[in-house]
Amino acid sequence: MAVRGKRWIEHWDPENEQFWEETGKKVARRNLWFSILAEHIGFSVWTLWSVMVLFMGPRYGFSAADKFLLVSTPTLIGALMRPLYTFAVARFGGRNWTIISAMLLLAPTILAAIAMEPGTSLGTFLLIAALGGVGGGNFASSMTNINAFYPEKHKGWALGLNAGGGNLGVAAIQLIGLLVIGTVGATAPRVVLYIYIPLIVLAATCAYFFMDNLASMKGDTKAMREVVKDPHTWVMSFLYVGTFGSFIGYSFAFGLVLQNQFGRTPLQAAAVTFLGPLLGSFSRPTGGRLADRIGGGKVTFVTFVGMAAATVVLILASTSNSLVLFTIAFIVLFVLTGIGNGSTYKMIPAIFRAKAKVAISEGADETLELLKARKLSGALIGLAGAIGALGGLFINLAFRQSFADTKSGVPAFIAFLVFYGLCFAVTWAVYLRKQQSEVASTRGLALAGAEV
Image (cartoon, rainbow, N blue to C red):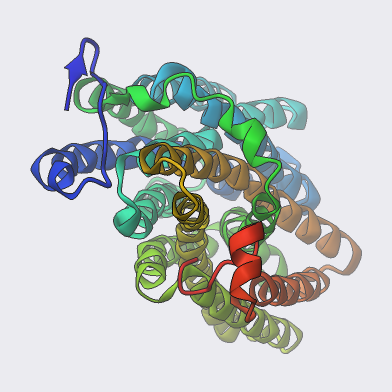
């Protein structure tokens, strides 16, 4: 492994077993852990307003619809930032961009600390929440970077761990919000922000001292243009709307739904809301590991079936006004979104590696094809992450309209149920249905479920 100044690694070949065992594994793990730290803080800042709205009592003068709009705003901006963050890794290097992206989190956090008090206009809060969307971009750059560090056989676990550790940032800030409300009270939101400002600086500092850039990714800005032409890009993006979009959308909305549908106080809502993102984050590496063993397509299909079933229970619990059943079903749904997140991200590099194997069997250069597969999968991870995050926006807008029209989340849950049905149908049709092997080899569209 050749290294030049400013922590750039010139040669990186994780598929070479000797290189991986002697050198690559240690370096990859170091970058993974500090990538998780920065991404974790990014997720916390991105979902900051799911906590801040719990502090917004009657004195703030905002309706339920206003609050759903407030939590929807960073979701939208975070989704739009993700393709740019994916490009940034190729432009600046994974380590360098982790430092920059971490420091960008200071702006929305400090501004929220200044503005968080009754009398501040909704427009001002919306602007600050929009700035918080930069935290959503961190996920795309982190996943693209870590994807390049790991060999194919370990990607499911590594990407699942990276994403799961990042997703824990949602549960962490909600848990801190609970502790603040429970100890200091619902009138002290700035305490949450004062905790995170030094953590942001810590994440940037650790990235500076302990992470690396991969020269093989430098200037790799053409991969995104190529990947958008691939039909799998849009299939995987659609499925990721169902998995990650559900996770992030429910993370923002869970507390508001409990308050508006079941009359929970801020403290009562906060005492429950962190459990869903927490368990959903822990289940994400499990989804990646299961996908490594039995195939991402199979795990994703079963996950969507389970998500549809959990949504049916949520509808029944809502109509019968059963808080206990509703809470249990919602947490189960969170766990399933985490498993689905891990399995879908395993599918992405597997798709391009399967295509590389076809090209190699037809005489293409093995090294170039495998490098191309890593670049394309990294680009798709960024794009699918962006489109998937839009699912979180749709979920919050659906809840906003549902509560505005009926004072209940049932119409929104019915819409989600239909969507999950489409997701497991698409997964089966594209990745699990039996296909002629010659079609798979010539078109690269019908990849075996065990591979993908």
